[in-house]
Length: 298
Image (cartoon, rainbow, N blue to C red; front, side, top):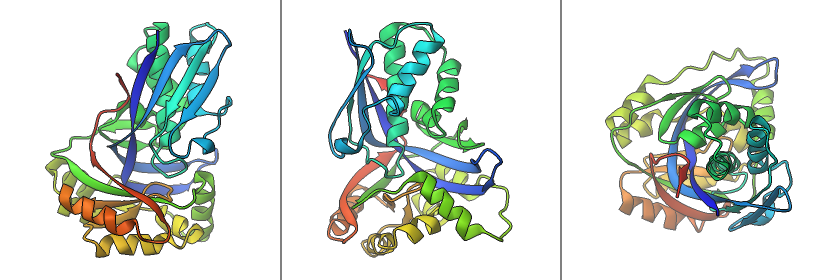
């Protein structure tokens, strides 16, 4: 018997970042949108204990030991229910690695849901979300999907209404960026400035609710973008190329280095992707729509 779970990537249509907290995290107002690029996590009983394998683009960059969020999710669920974590987790990877689209978090949420189904633990949604929050700031949203406002460090979610589909292009970069390094650069750039308390943007929320791409394009923001560009200056040329090709908005996705481009329709998205593929810092460009559901048993 095996259980396969499909989990989407995310884009942040708003990422407002507050000052560093005493625990080292930052207060956030994080408006997530799940988009149709997916990892799949398959859980199968394993007589040899916990194992992790991975295939797909960038699979060589994925850790296969117990630092992997999928492995940590299985261990956390097994410990909570007093059982051995005897499971083989296979990750079919299609979300960019170290790309600011929550690929690792998606794998954690996928493994958690797959192991819950495989082991028949019967965990409630609240229990699963509690484990997700312990695993990482983006993991709860990977479980939930759709659109949501994340507060605290991003783990406290409020679902949001979305009035239609939004078309996106995602340009994966020629190298990754470490999320902790981007936050450290954010702190360095913000040194000596008063950082306001992060709050959700009413124009962003209204644009999502109305399904209005022009209004959303005018409202998207990412407070981590200057830090990502400081560490990876070539991303500026990618953003400019996307705007020149017809994107309504261009921004770094989360902590980067993947860049996200909002398009008016599917046809325009394909044209933007084609233009981006020839830019120096772009490894490949993919189109996707959102919102889509979160972790789902196939």
